Length: 295
Length: 318
Image (tube, rainbow over all chains, first blue to last red; front, side):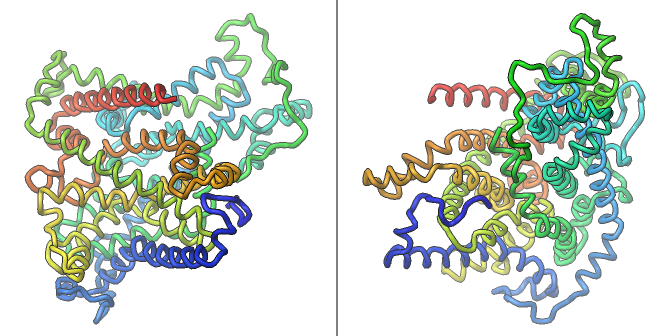
């Protein structure tokens, strides 16, 4: 992070180092570290260990802090009874496809809009950005009607992964992020490539993309986590038990399954995104702030 | 993350940038497209996706709201769908719930992240750890997090996490999702826990852009901590504060998974029904896609009207 210890913030360094300031600082820091750990990590601990408790133990008062007689069987039951392997595979498949489609089509479009000067480029860009103003819930019904009977082609995309992949390409935020990044690449580089006889595709592949790794990383991470977290759209367009995503699958089973098993399944479903986060946390946090701040 | 630029080279303003291939100003539209085939080929995939899954559904939503499809036959019915939706007693309940959810989420989920960010920005230690903690819930699939709240935190007996804490502190316990009064606060708590990380990180980035001299000057003028927050921090982050307020209101007004999972949809005495949930109900359970489309248009108008008022107000303040 950009902030180093020399940057002046609300309270001055000197004040924090002196007697009383120092005491207040360390007290507050301890309280916040302990408090945040309890508030943000505590529920996750409760979730992972709760799913290890037996049916009786989870219903006892007061609740126990550690599972007295750990039941890994809950996790095994969740895995087997909810066919989690299949659900996780489906979600992974949709996420991977969404990533490929978004990277290829959105990068190409942003590149064209930024560097290739297509006819009506600005109008197209404005129309894309305008979709950011339309709340998702407003479009859910007409989008569903479109997907069950595509205009002109009259194909029904229900239970087809394309019903998840293609609508995600229409992501104005991606286009905006990528185009702004490409805009910052000097025209001189493009001109030099042109003089060397490089085609636009060659320029994109050999010059633009290698320079754009950070932004492509951000777009990729958000593409994958968005699919993993989404609920309503996959619930609507993937109605069959064989094509469900993991969140929708757990929800579908939640009525008739013991709650510890549902929670065990929820823990398993959360592992991939948590792992992605722990690996890529720097990229995620910087991506979040570039996207929103320096507009 | 630094945006890569080559130092020392800058494009001169008045000079047109080279394009592929060079084209003259007087050619026709079709000619321009043909001359720059690559450029348009690159664009076409995304444009088709936008057209089919975004632009067309926008128009279709409005068209559908004035039609009715029965047994495969579609007829124009004027305002019938809107009248039917307005007649539904759940309509007003859903709007009341949606407004109170949005308001509560704004009180809790807007101010809290700002002060958390101010606090975190002062710390010289454990910064990375605290940031990761705050953002961790954002990465959980909402369904997973909501099942955690539903089964373990909001258990109405004293075996539930919240009730266990309350009774350990000798405070009265609550029925949570089974009490119509507590349904809304319970949903807001869960939603804030899941979502506040993003706002905290965005505020943190904004706070780091405040020049330190401003605080120094304020301190020299004798301004205490609170005065410095009011007179330096808030004015310096005003734009981002306004933007996030807007985004948060639009996002929370569409809340859907919270009622669906925590309250099994409508909740005790309809206390959880949201407008988004009503759209889902009409469209996918009552086989009334046209009514759902009308409700969507109403929601769009309310949100757009709200945004307009908000923009007008914030423009006046400047």
